[in-house]
Length: 295
Ligand code: ATP
Image (tube, rainbow, N blue to C red; front, side, top):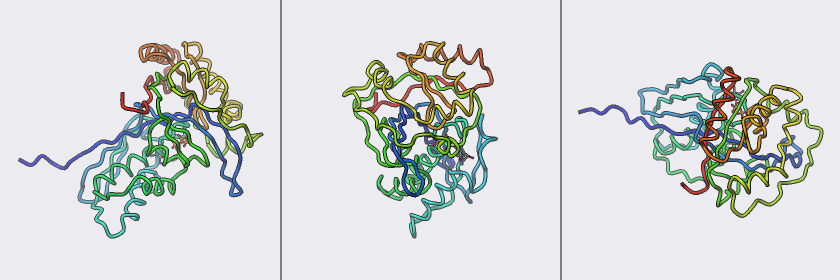
């Protein structure tokens, strides 16, 4: 009996910058950052199947906001990997993207989609490309793609491509809230008044809810003041998280998504339901971050 083409699904988690310090600027204009980032169970999904010719389709709540043409990072990732494969065989594939993450929202959705495609096609095509080479291809697509390929708690430095995975990092209960205002990363960086801020302080030896909350109190997202000034709804998202009982609330990346840190998954779910009831048009998701070791 024909069981049909083999369809496999790859997770494209949301990237959450728990802290993001802007520490300088390179002569070419790229900003230097230090960021502690985690990746969540909630995210986009990428489905890959063999096909007669290359195909691409998008479903999900935020499908209308992404380009369907060559501007989509999914197709850029497919084409970059095919080019890197050289004479190795890279037969046509059908790629379906389930777009659950709001676009231009500070959660690295496009970068994570690209990472899922690189990982997924690397396996589907049996390319045997090592992780350093995959990260190099990823970096050519965007500064955040290498960290999305790692998808573990990590500190990113440089322009985001120098990665140190953080061990002993427990899963966290998180609520993600986006008030629906897309934010241009370039505009936020351009609006910064200081670009030579203090680096991140040393991390606690073991990271759980309590040690992380103490550490977060002495760190920053240096992009948050400029983003809140441009989009006051971000300030409202942060106050809703606080009102719903978040242990710590901050904006991720260049916004507008904000995260709240919760001690347990159940408390996070209750808080998300409360915010959703008050702001039915906002994006609100309760999720858990991935721990450094499988839990
Ligand atoms: P970051 O935190 O890295 O700045 P972001 O979450 O703010 O990322 P993305 O959602 O990755 O931003 O989108 C940034 C831009 O990339 C948008 O202008 C969008 O049109 C384009 N884009 C291309 N492909 C995708 C994709 N697959 N998903 C989302 N956006 C995409």
